[in-house]
Length: 284
Image 1: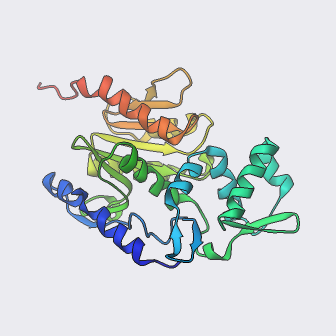
Image 2: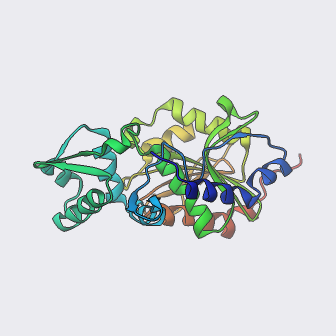
């Protein structure tokens, strides 16, 4: 996808939020992170404008991507070569909502319609999953909603496997790390869980979140987290619907039953109202 002069200017402006400086002040060395506005693996939508050329409509896509049904449809179409109406109806039971999102995706060039089926636009031939886009969305939520420094796909020295952390943000100088899982929860392996816990131990943020993009319960993933965690406190549910879990001092796991924004807000609300006041270290 073409990077415009406007994209480059926006990218340069985005670097002025002291993200790297804040890492340095806490003793960490940034190796790299993905661009805020021009990551080629992040899905963007464009609209042709005669005066300025191809213009990215980031806010429009951001709003749509926040809906779980939109993400499910987009994930399915981008992963498969061709999708019929019947299989998409199984993902979205509301015909009105399905038509709305298919119309949106078609209008903005995300997908193409051929006869009675839909397929990914050739513009996105190098994108076969929404994982990087989910990471970008989470980082963008921190930047736009909380107005704090955040980056996605962050590599940090001395963190497990090169320190490739999905999202790192600073909230009131508190380091937050978010690991994003966009596929089926059943595909999250023991290796995935162990690596998340290792990164959380190496980077040791005040808040380490495993965000699983599903509306279903995440009992199986919690069982793995508790099996491999270090520390005495197991992860336990913090709400009646078993959507948010906390334990092992700084580990949080959450699904997206309501929305990604609501899930992240719930983590922060729990931390600021309860967890940060707890004493974890005792002198024997």
